[in-house]
Image (tube, rainbow, N blue to C red; front, side):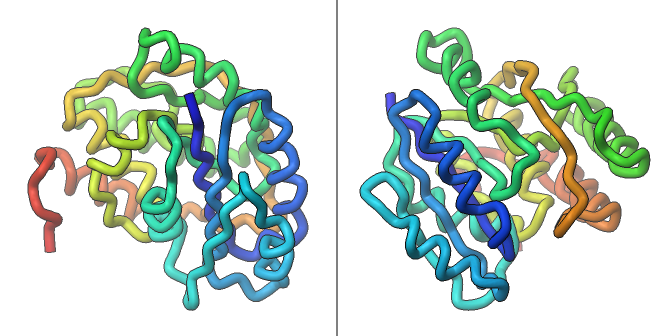
Length: 227
């Protein structure tokens, strides 16, 4: 079973090479689909040098946001399963092995990696807990970590979600549409260490996340995108 690791990257010159190496070291059949989202710090040249038979590199001519980069990567993915991997060092790619296990043996169809948020600043930790609570209230769930980057599922399901959010609100969109498609989300603990240098996400991104959770609460699979 092949895993496509979707890796959006914007100005991650300091970490991108290390992250790619760590993912490549994971003992799984995988490909990396890396999308440089119009970086201005030298990331573009670094990722071009990383391109190989297992690392596909794509470039956006202008910065379009994390959600748009995920869509570009998803369109190019060829694996049976897909997962998002941030291009920094907050997540440990070795956790992908345990997340894949319930998908491979058929005991789950969607798996989320649950973080411990103790390393986050208080305002970010409270924000994460709030949007997870809101998702649970709106969608009748008991999720522990709606905002986790590690969301793993089959490629066909991910592509059927018809993603449209451009920025970090894509995490809420994925969760909402997975649940509205009738899938249960299986959660497993993962390693996580918050980083603050070059951090893109801010508390202000909470509002679009809340809006996405509200917007997609009545979404139905196969329905045209809202305008």
